[in-house]
Amino acid sequence: MRTTALNQQGEAICKPRLQATICDVGELTPGDRDDMFALMSRHYENVERGRFDTDLEEKQWIIRLIDSESGALRGFSTQMLLTTCVSERPVRALFSGDTIVDPRHWGSSALAIAWGKLVFSVVQQYSGEELYWFLISQGYRTYRFLPVYFREFYPRFDAPTPPRVQHVIDVLGAEKFAESYDPSLGVVRSSRHSYRVRTELGEVTSARLKDPHVRCFVDHNPGYGVGDELCCLAPLSYENFSRAARRLIQSDRFSSQTIV
Image (cartoon, rainbow, N blue to C red):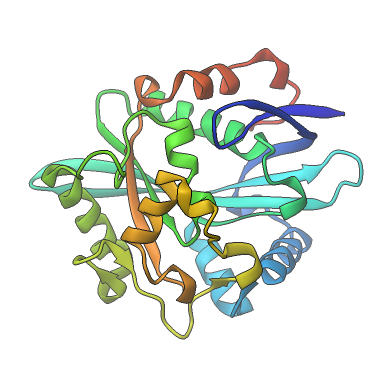
């Protein structure tokens, strides 16, 4: 079976089908955790089991991508909801933590669709509140998700980050990452304990730099190669999803995916 995805130009392409499920962290079995750690270790350097488990325990939800033919884990993303106060305003932010998709399935939209359904439920639950997606991006592929799926997001190549938005990024970055957050660049600095995308997976070629979004990512995060992560923000609302993303996420073609 095959499913439709969006490429980096927002065009439809076909990929082998993955089944996406969302569950609470507490529902994961020891075998699930082992599979997640193994997948992470194959694509990142410096992955330690103790820290991996600690990071996992603080999260609320896990999006898992399962190969519909073999039943093997092909990707996952951890999620949690942050609550803070910015200039005496209550702010919530959905934070995406460890995220990996097997390179053989790059371009599949299964993760994006499941994540979008999770976002829609969060937006509905916190309707009327100031709500964001807080993303840290070590690679351009993750950052490239923003212009494909959102109308407004920061940082971006075609507009400066408004001071009000930058303040939200700074507060979230400092509260979540403490001294590792560098407000002068808006990045989380790498340490000797940090994960790093393997070079062959995260390298930015000269051809890629012709994409203004990729160039923006590199300009804002020059230390991506040593594991620095760019802090990004997008308002979470139905209106802020791109038209193509809303159509894809809400499509009945994906009703057979398990979202719990």
